[in-house]
Image 1 (cartoon, protein in one colour):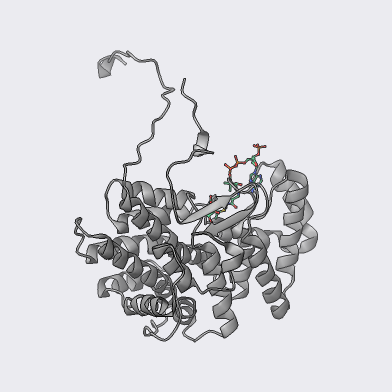
Image 2 (image 1 turned 90 degrees about the vertical axis):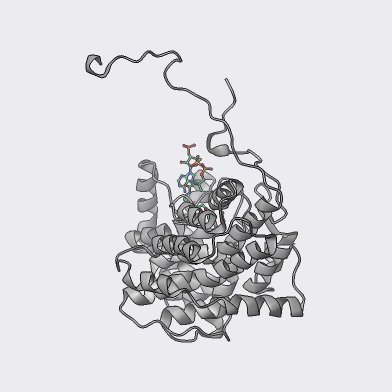
Length: 374
Ligand SMILES: CC(=O)SCCNC(=O)CCNC(=O)[C@H](O)C(C)(C)COP(=O)(O)OP(=O)(O)OC[C@H]1O[C@@H](n2cnc3c(N)ncnc32)[C@H](O)[C@@H]1OP(=O)(O)O
Ligand SMILES: O=C([O-])CC(=O)C(=O)O
């Protein structure tokens, strides 16, 4: 019998130059740069460049990328029509997955694209994914779609389109750091999904719509929305202990806690924790962070499990007045850079992903009995 690694735990499926997650040490780096070196020191646009070119841009390179991203901000009219006619009750993440698939229909869909053209598609997707999310959010409230602006950063432009107002510098910087922290994470489930699809030599849009579908699950990027639902259900700091005890007794998963690779604290969590503390203090609403800290302590002490990236990002986005169902979309907006960089890397040295399975069904040699005699 072949040895099966359930959930592919510990399996090394490919080489990558993009990012490394060192689970035992709690280290994450993108192209050699520790996440602590990047967060707060470079913009999301610089990280996009880093992932696409494996080096940080100089001023001219950054300006060229920024111009290219901003030049792609107009969506095809057909996609806008979809965003304004999609059911208002639809989940934004589902709308994004579908809109990315639609973008593929508006592209030439040639299969003989060269790497430069694939990279242009990647830039377009990085540019347009936030606009899709923000425009749907406006449309579902019956609000007008603010005109595209070319003078705002990726983070500021998303907040501007979502609210109709240019955000404060602090809100922009907070979201920008969140984008930097979420951009890349090795062979996580959604990135692996994107690479599996790309490995068949399918197109970028198919890879990315599949990746969005993988991200939305509550065991992956969907957990950040689950965290706020959990905090709302708990209600107040004094109820945390009994709520968590009940949940664990029922073998429920606590959202935002635990990780397949990190055996110690996710290095992204302290950055988000710091931002969450500051924002909740400013808002005079410390109960969110108080509840979170108590949950994290219980889980660490009782289960030896730590907070992951989704745990504190939930409170950060909530404090920025972002509706809960846009939390996973924000993750997708940032991870678009990592996904597309991985698709480009896959195509630079492609081999089809095709693992084996261990058959455990009925014995070989069953005979067909005619349908009326079964
Ligand atoms: C961006 C990201 O994707 S980060 C992850 C986001 N997901 C979440 O926050 C959801 C909650 N966490 C989880 O479900 C898991 O920790 C995962 C999915 C992230 C990792 O899962 P795996 O590596 O497959 O670990 P698995 O689910 O097998 O858990 C191992 C043990 O820890 C327990 N455990 C792991 N996470 C949790 C949790 N959040 N709450 C309670 N128990 C947990 C499991 O119940 C299991 O216990 P057992 O051995 O007694 O049965
Ligand atoms: O790596 C993982 O399994 C999940 C994760 O933290 C991420 O995608 O950021």
